[in-house]
Image (cartoon, rainbow, N blue to C red; front, side, top):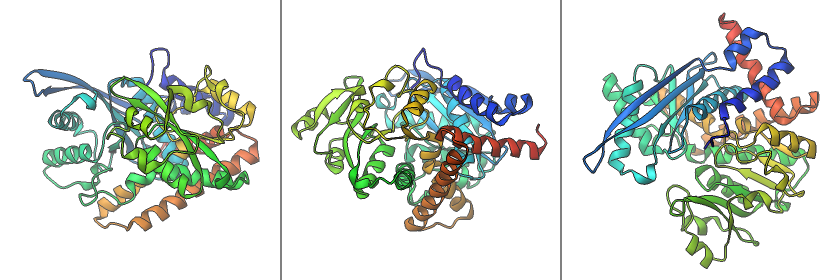
Length: 428
C-alpha cells in the first residue's frame, strides 16, 4: 500500500502526462482524463462483537465511464488511502481499454484489516458499503469485484444487500461471486493465468524457451499462486516467493535453490497468502528479507503484490540475468524505475496489460450473469487466452513500430481509445 512519501495517483498522472505529450492531447482531453469523474467518501458504522461501535471509512472512485459501465475491485486494507483508490480506478480505465472490453474504470476500498475482524464484522462492513452506494453502483453503471483481502463471500454479501435494497435480482451487479451463485468458472485463475498468457507470448517474441527460465515472485495470494501454477506447467521454475507475515507484521522471502513446490507451500499458507515460516524452514526453505525476491539471479521477475515495489531506490539491485519484468500487481513499478529498466533493456509487461485477465474474466462473468447462461471453464479460459494474446500483440507491435517502451505503447492504445470515446460522446 502507498507509503507517506509515495502518492500512487500522482504516479498514475505522471504516466498519463508522458503519453498525453506523445499524443499531443489538447488541454480539454487532458483535464478530463488525468482526473476522476466522481468520488464517494463515506463512513460505515459497525456494531463490533465486543459490543462497541467502530466507524470504518469507505470509498468508491469512478475515473471514466465513456466506454461503458465502471469496473473495478474493492480492497479491504488497513493502509488504504483515497489516492490509492484514485490511482487504481485510473489504471482500471486504461486496463479495460487496452484489452478492448466495453467498460470504464472504477475502484473501491475500506480502511480495515480483515485479519482482525470476525466474519460477522466483515459482513457488516460489506453490507454497509453497499448501503452507502446503492444509488451509484449497479449492473449498468458501475460493477464492483474482489481485490486485495476481499473474496467471493464478501461479494455475495454485497450482492444480497444490493438485491434487498432494489427488491429484485441483479446477479450482474457484482463479479467474483461463488460459482453456483452467479460466479464464472475460471474467474479464480483469471488474473494469474492472464499474466502467464502474456508472458508466454513475450517469451515467443524474445525466442526464449520457458523451460530455460527461472522466476522470482513477490506475493503469494490468488494472482501469484495461479501464475506460478501455469508457469510451472509451461516448464518454468520459481526459485522464491515473498509474502507478508501477519504475526511479525513484516514480509519475508522464501527461497529454495532447487525451486519451490507450489502445492507444498499452499499446504502451509493461510487464506491471506501468508506462509508459516517454521514449517517452511522444515521443508528446506531459506527465509530472507522482504526485498530479497528482487535480487535473485533469475530471468523473470513477477511483482504480484502491491504498488510501489520496484522503485528508483531498489531497481539497481535487480540481477543482470533478468530479461523480463511481468507485472501481476497494479502500479508496482515507479517512473524512476521504468527509466532504469528501459535503459538496461529489461522487457516490461506493464500491469494494466499483463494483469488484465482478472477484469476480462469479470467482464465474462458480468455477461453470463446478465443473460443467465454460463460457459464451461474451457470456454472461459479459451476466450481469456484469445483476449490477452490479442492485446499483447497489439501493444508489442506498436512498441516495435514506433520504438516505444512497452508501458508507453500500452498507454498510447488505451488513452487513444478512451479519448476517442469521450470525443464521440461529445464530452470534449
